Length: 338
Image (cartoon, rainbow, N blue to C red; front, side):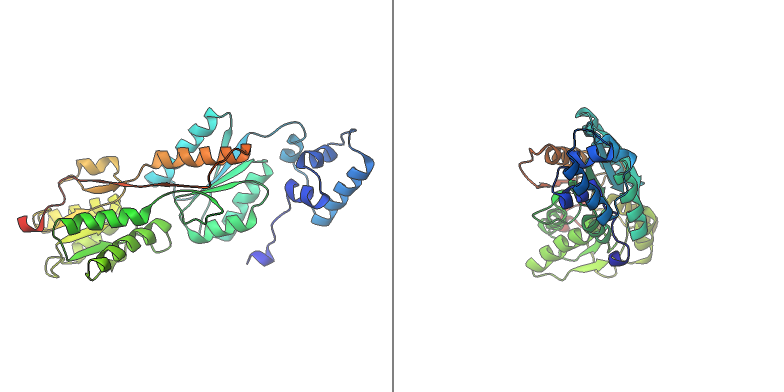
């Protein structure tokens, strides 16, 4: 629990308690002779009260900004998070900032805590969270203060910096495409339940089905190719009267298409399939996969731009949403053609 593991005070906390700037605190740490004795005493008392321990990064603040941005990231073995981190690093370097990335286990608060501590010891001026796990994002927001924090591809509040694909709209777009083709018996294979993208894409599907007076049916999945293959191998969609499947990501969809080929199910003649992401390999699937495209690189670039503007005090907005677009290929067809 957070209450049993309090956040270590930082230089900004000391500055607030002593009612001075963080530059003044840093000058006290470095024994700068320009500090008035009464100010120095007030700062030292605040440091003692907060049990603040100066570090090398804090000393660096005495003369200049560190020009360092921290990134807490998980699941970077997937294309999306990896692309976002790469683009953030590029965008930061263009503005003269260096990026320090720290991998975390988003399901383990201790791992997240260690990542926060590591980056704060380096004196980062801002922090980006690249994880779709709700608990990890809430933990970071509750335990980081004094610097701006931006989240990528996650749920957000109006008072927080955030950049995200509108996954709900993406779920609506994929489902509506199948409805427009005349399909009514549509199944959704979801991603993992503890991911923002998964729950919002499923919500978009469910809402669209209900609005069309149809019954939504969801099969729990994850993001793995093997899971799409397993579900495609185990479930007889044609026997259940299913004519279309919306799958939460392209990786599962690729495994699913392979299972359909092995079972002799013709796509799209017998079963239409839509994915989500528009991975590079999706256009080379057999048949080429209809999918919802999200721009991972744009997400990373916009998040870093938003964070740097906030650091400089020139930010004009807090939220930025990217609307994904439907890419129609050969894995979907009109129901009348089946």
